[in-house]
Image (cartoon, rainbow over all chains, first blue to last red):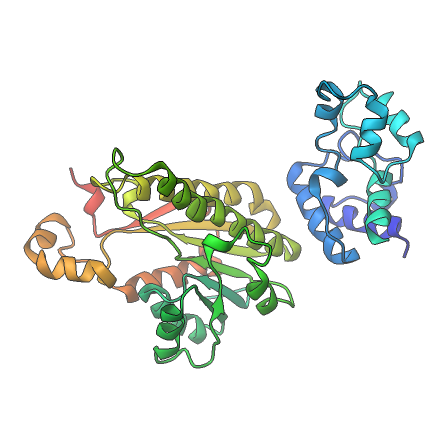
Length: 121
Length: 247
């Protein structure tokens, strides 16, 4: 199983939904309506499944809104700042995130896949 | 009584109530690990008849935030679990509110509240991985009615009760539930000497006319761990012979 397939299966189990309803581009909050307790369970599963240390804030972009809305006086380039905070995200994905702030949390399944791949190196 | 789980972590395992609980857990077929934080505590566990089949494990709430704060309990539960968790650990800070030094108060809350939140987090994440867990916290009637000198003790008991209630509220749907037991006077430790000296007062003050015994507390805890008690979630239960029901 690929990293994506494992995460897909874990999420389907936690949320009690069909695996087919979960794709790489699926939004966790907007589409799957996850709750914070589901993310806690997912973090625990990722940690044991992939044998990695999982930082909940980092993997689920929990502080993203604060980084964008209150970056602090010393930050002049939000895009570079986000890339520093989330080193596992590509520049293309950061641009996508910055352009996608209107409809709620941006977290997608593919972000978690990228995090796991980054932590597993 | 039925028990879905198998393994138990008993924190503060060298106190009399924990030592009374251990044989009941063993009889129920549960595998318990008792923790100690001092050599005296370790010896007390080892010297208690019936604890031969368990090896005590080091854990100190005051060191919970150290990098290796959980290494011993991690090693004991390397295969997953615990399924059950009973928390007896609690330091005392007896002082008038207006006389305690803020540094001492800080240390006390750091150990008993912050350290415990780390312990609860440790247990909760392990339990959610199996979607099963039951936590019991030994509080005190002081969380409901306190005497002079008990301000900090009561404050930390209330704070810790709220943490356990939080887990029960947040995680019950994931299979993890909590219950809090508030014993009043228990005939053990320092309280035993106090009650021997104040027998008439105890008889008059407590409707039941006596303190609870460690065995009674242990049997109640065993029931609270059992499958049938799981709907008793995120709530305190008082076991004080009627003491706090009186004016």
